[in-house]
Length: 195
Image (cartoon, rainbow, N blue to C red; front, side):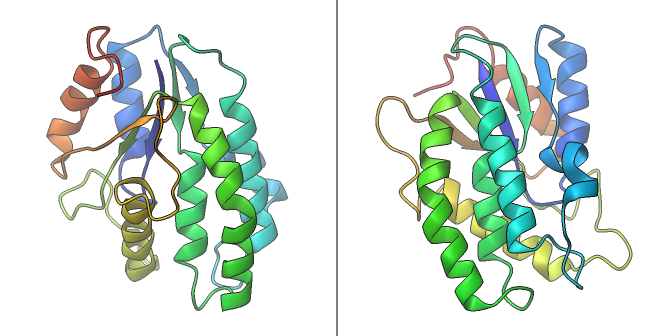
């Protein structure tokens, strides 16, 4: 099954994936694009990616989804939809024109890319999470990204999902201790990844 773990920053995605891989070693891990591209990503004065930087991250992630064929056991850290949420949440960091332009251009790219996934799990922002916001980190921005990601994946505000080739989307429990067992259950061979 091709699985993406989505969520705002500091929600415990990496921790969850590491625990999952210990239990499901047959899965290949595709790390977050920022881990690969960090040195090449331009940041704003608020330390978030510029529109061009976020575009590079989104395109890298979308391309990574095409590498693994249906039936592959792979877990991705982030889905392309994450970058739409970051753009939509970037008010005060980007101009409203930059946000609108980014979304207009990239929603179709994300819609197409998501067809290469079977399951997206959303790790919510949680005050009880394994990773708390770091000192100096903008907690309001973190929550805005979480809200925008919920709207993109659960409410389907951008019409990204629908049809037989769309991935199943599941919000994991806000209780971190439950997330691993939920992910194991969702990826079991009899779960099928879709409803």
